[in-house]
Length: 296
Image (tube, rainbow, N blue to C red; front, top):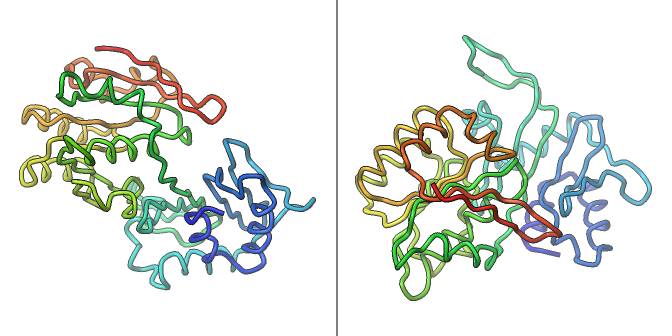
């Protein structure tokens, strides 16, 4: 069983952990394809394995109750939920090593902003995968005559944008010709320490993307920036500023198609400004990545 899955199982209630462990141990690949574990209060738990949702374990649904959900969140937060209060309001907590836990529940709002979450009803635990080699065919598009170009990749959620960016960051920052790569890792999802031990990578975890890009360009002299899931006004303005400094950016955005991507005003603004030299749509076919590349 892969180490990333084993690490997260220890946070789950014993009876749920054991059922999931037994199920994954029975699979031909021992659960290496698990990308998400979802716990829902008084509703079926599920695994996402190779893009399929599994909710039947040994012929039965697996349920967590409200106390088990709260207990699991407490363990994930190292019994200090208040320390993570700000990110919980944004709908997630993160653990070192690229784990992000999405949080769903009853929110208390003030002036269109979430002031707090008082009842947690479900947890979505994303399992990171330290996979190398998946960006091989894309590297020749990113590196042109020795120079890295700015590129935007897009897909719907869950297809593998973060896994792809992680591999791109790793490949560009290691080996002969390694570059100084700055990873703006707001939610702690991209960087996995074991993967980058020999990399010339600087990681900014928890920084808002716009502020992280601004600080990186001003103080870290990066040769490449990597940033996941862009799209706000502040992020678009920061990217415009960074590009004026001559630092190439490889970033991602959510969209189901190129047309849908262009309907996002701030992404469209960046494309019209020719910030990105290439835009790449991602699909997974039979577990392998397929790229639709457009030159801008």
